[in-house]
Image (cartoon, rainbow, N blue to C red; front, side, top):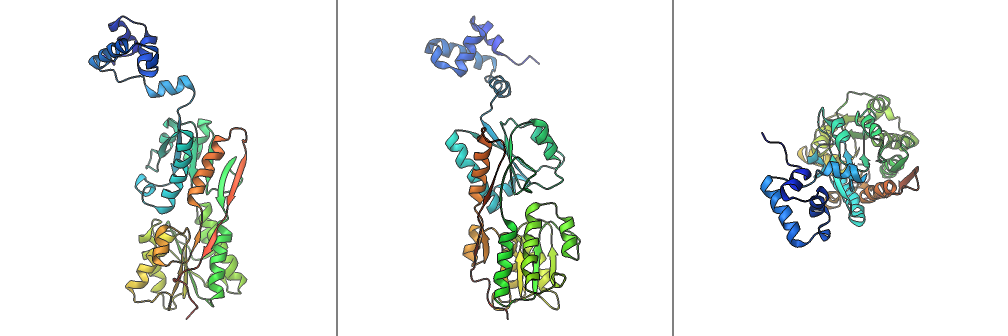
Length: 344
């Protein structure tokens, strides 16, 4: 097999310098149209596709691209409403700053390798687990990074909402409606019997904070949290809510109100209720978290959070080289809709 042609190969074949060949690809205004076409024709003839982008980036010290690390497969990045909106926020700033995006998804056994080899100038890291091996790879790169939905204080640049306050408002809303028999739907199936066991098993900051917020309000109303039924199922989507919600609704003393970690899971609970003939909200109140577009269509009570602004704020922090340490806390809003009503 013949060696891959290089700048030097083309230069020798045309009888010009390596700089002339480089200019033909990178600075065409430096050459006459005739000379540039002669160089490009010879490059096509020899199978040369242009300078290696990695080498070009190393020579300039910048790639012009931002890496977005998501703790999910690529398919979820393009289908989960929260992830889609966050990426839209990153993309809006990239568009303003004329930058590209490189997605670094969750791929079994290759996660850290993808981080180490990503051709980027920095990372926006979205909702990473505590024990994620990619964190070591990020630190090894010595590139700037901004964390979204990660425990405050563990990164120099961070963007969060107050998940605990948002969850507490949801539970308080249900308490004010007279509910005292609660169920909680969680993702990422775990084996636990109490809130303390669930908190110990959770690997995500947002999961822990939302569970703590619900507990704050429920215990504040004089309801022991060990009477609250907890249920989980694999994943973090509607199928998760449908399975976990079904577990709660099949109990002899089923809850009158169910709070969920996300709107997607809450929509799954609504499916489980419909399958069992449980009327919402007459017999069961359901609340989610996120205010995804589907939540409004379904009349779902939820907590609105600014997903797009999360992505945009994280990238703005990353690009502000004059401020090496900064954090942003974005607001949330309880949005009551028709999925919650007074307790039966």
